[in-house]
Each structure stands twice: as C-alpha cells, then as structure tokens.
Image (cartoon, rainbow, N blue to C red):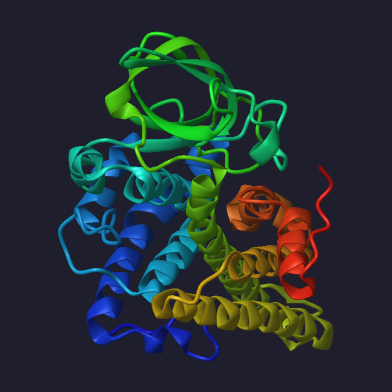
Length: 392
C-alpha cells in the first residue's frame, strides 16, 4: 500500500479495509497520471477533457452505490474518500463526477421505477451515457423548493415542459438530464429524464466563469419540450423526494471541501520547503509554520467530521442536519485554508503555474453550490432548536 496523503495527519484513510483502500489507490494513480497534468490547461481554456471519460469509466466506480450496477457496494467511507481524492486532484473533475454519479444517477436510483433503474443506471455506471441534474433556475436558487417555475403539463401519454434552468453542470454534453418541474395540475414538483436531442430542449454553455472553469455549466431552455410518461420518474412526487437526493450529495460536497484543503496545504508545505528568503527556506520562519499548522488543523478537524458523517450514513441514522452542518462548516474552513495557502505563496499564489490559484477560485463555487452556508445553517438551526427560521 502507498503512503497516505501528506495532509492526512491522523491517518483516517487507514480506516478503510484493504480492498476498499486498493480501489482508492487505483483512482489516485489515475488522477495523478491523467488528470493533474492537464488540470490547469483545461481550466484556463474552460474546456472539458471528454477523452478522459473512458478512463473514468474503466475505473469501474461510477455505479458502485447502486444495486442495479455490477460490483460490491462501497462503504460511505470509501465513497467519501473518492470524492475527496477527486477534488484533491481537480475540483472541476470532482464536480463533473459528482453531478453524474450523485445527482443524476442518484435521482434515478431514488425516484425511478424498477424498470427505469434497469433502463438507465447500467449504461450510466459504464459512463456510456452521462447525466446532468437540472434544478436551479435563473430566478431561483435557495428558494427553489417553493419558487420553482419550470412547469410540466400532461397531455395524454406525454408531458410538456416549459421553463429555464441555470448552472447545470454537464448540461452541454449530457445524454440524460434530470429536469425538475412543477406539475401544473397538482402543483407538486416532479422529475423527468430528458434525453439528448429532444425537441424543445436547448443547452447553452455559460461563459466567463471564474471558478470550476472546466465544468461545462449550461443555461437550459425548455420550450414545449415533450417527454413521454415513461421518462417521468415514477417515485418523484414532491420536492421532499428531491431533497432526499440533495441530502446525500451535500455530504459529498463536504468531502470535496476537505480534498481542496488537503491539496492547498500540500502545495503550501511543498513551496515553503523550496522557497528561500533571507538565506533560508521560509519553512523555518515561525509565521509560516503557524499558517501551515492552522491549515492542517482545519483540514484535520473537517476530515474527522466527514468520516463520522460517513459512518452515520452506513449506520442508517443520517439526517438532513448532519450533511448540512458538514457542508456549511467544511466549506467555510476551506475558504480560510486556500486563502492562507495563497498568502504563503505571496505573488506566486495568483498564477496558475503554482496550482493554488485554481483551488482558490474553485473553492468559491464549492462554497456556494448544494446549499449556501446560510441555508444549511438554518437547516441545522431548525434541528437543534425545534423551530424553523426560514422566511417564506
């Protein structure tokens, strides 16, 4: 077995059994050989490396969490470490993978009928079909539960979708897009799988992003988009079903935040040993060591939190407030850590050559998506006080 990540100070990775750690190490090798060398170039050009999809597919990890897909079911701990490892290499590619396996496949697994799961999940697990998840709208983010405007109107055996979606990761090239729309008849939010090429569906790449530039986010327009009843997720009956999916993927974002922290810490530590000022490596300066230890402390505390979160998932006692606290806390600490790493690198921290600039920028998107800090705080606040403070 190879060495632990430099920032895994308490050796949390060693909690994995040997067979699961072998999976993690195989993924780590792929990421370091294929993803890390091109991450900055893809980010700068805002282009997605579609040729790498085959490599991700060959890892055999896309469908591990779903019974319809081959292979042993992973522990929550392995799933978490895989998210961490991907973000440690490149947050953009971690987001691509999380959208496909967590949001899109997760929607079908949780809300699809047995026939729908058999129809789509095996191909998605082999990454022969790539998924996207269309919930957020141009005029709605945090208020999407009550403010979702995209409509679905039934006409016999067909549903007609009208509306707009924004910030849809993988949206420009996805084969299957899970679209959430409000049923015009009963007012309930329901899910629909829209296949690439469906008339009335248009996806346009969002340009000029400063974060997660490799991710192909799209503005989606649905104009009289006709979807067969067979593509309506049969078990998606209200926004509560959408929230069940977000609960699990939100915990994955917390793991991503830890991956970003560990990467930032390792970049800063390596730089501090190589960079000399006043005739000595800056790692010998007390203030530099203080920054490094603060980074390591944040990352270690957050890693301990998400490890316990994964254990709660495996024990079946996992609630909204658990993932909400982890997402809010870990992403807040992540912003501090990448800022300190950038500070340690001084001027070199603002150019891509030293990697940290990409992590600083990408951290802003991770901090915001899958529920803002404020919304996640209110979820936890409601759980601990028994009183909701949401304004409706």
